[in-house]
Length: 247
Image (cartoon, rainbow, N blue to C red; front, side):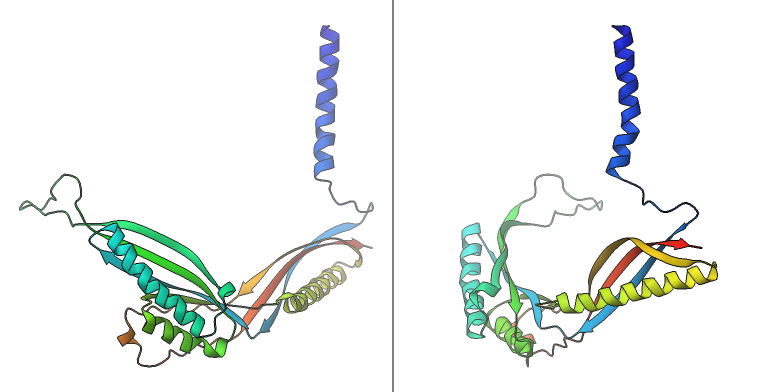
């Protein structure tokens, strides 16, 4: 029995490296050849055609019910203003709804310390926020103005996007691969070698927008529709390419 146990343990130990090798096989290249790993970036720019931002109402009341009731009435006006401004129902989604207590500031004692004891609730605060997608960017300033006029006291954004980014991403991918291949050829020539083949390619990508933030406390702060500049979006693709170099 001891012999069988020892043989089984030996077999398991011998099979472990093989199992690991199957999970993460090393790229195979011919004997005498060299592996070169190159990381390169490609980019493309587009004018955005979509923006997202948030609009919300914060209300306070003596009770939770009073705060929520006031908030609901005001938020209904905000959502109605969005619809009148041409924002479709599918482009408005509740992202946050909360009711929380408002506590009194602790009393400060003559010695500079604060009075111990449980905090006293002096009221309640209700928050309701919707996420908005703006498809007509030229109307965005007017929509923001309408929101604040309707009672929104929290407006944050926008985050500019492309509704269909694949064409721009493909341009960046092509540029990244051209750059990687040119760099590989350069290294190969400098080393007296040539590029035999591509062994592997991996990619990471993303947007590089320029975010803007604006917050308005009351309609009186908005003498006119705020100017909103969409600018451009830059799509970036990073590729890591392994090349096999041969003499």
